[in-house]
Image (spheres, rainbow, N blue to C red):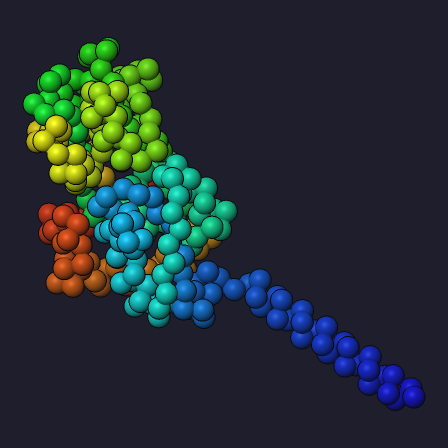
Length: 283
């Protein structure tokens, strides 16, 4: 009886120890290890053509999701799940674990660098304005908006352009914050805003979508420091995942396959950059 009892105790101890080891190993597993083990990764995005958006049939596409699909495939990941959220909720959603990476064309800024770990940029791009046809108020810069107190500018909440506008002297009562680019287009068409601001590609896309009533301003005078550098973003503790992605990006960006992948979204060789995240973060 004692032998059986002892054997039972030893067995229970072994099971408990094995359970502890498995639990400890699982808790120590990094995001990179998990996505390579499961073959699945979750990307977070906000609807902003051409960077990341949902097509009418429910497909998630755009420059950033397509790059994510290619790069993660090189890391052995076969399934990319996409989580739609508003732009301003992307970083909180990443930190809360709703997804593993932000694939939304997010600009690298010093402030964001305090919250996330950016990969090196996959593109560079300037901004411009969307206005009614003919640009009635002759707006060609943030300064032009600031000088006309009755002028309203539609800006997507949480974007770098919000800071640029305020730095240029545009008052908060001149700023109409909206959740997405569709709302920017609607604000201009409904004349609730005299202009909307965003990346040149986005504003050109909205002009095409909005019809003959609106146009993207062809000459926008902006501070060169405002050129946007977009990148994938990771949780600060996932630097091993970020570094693995960077390695694949550096080998792939600028190749024929890369340019073919982003071409349908309006990107070409002029959008390539040799900037690195640390210098854009101010490091």
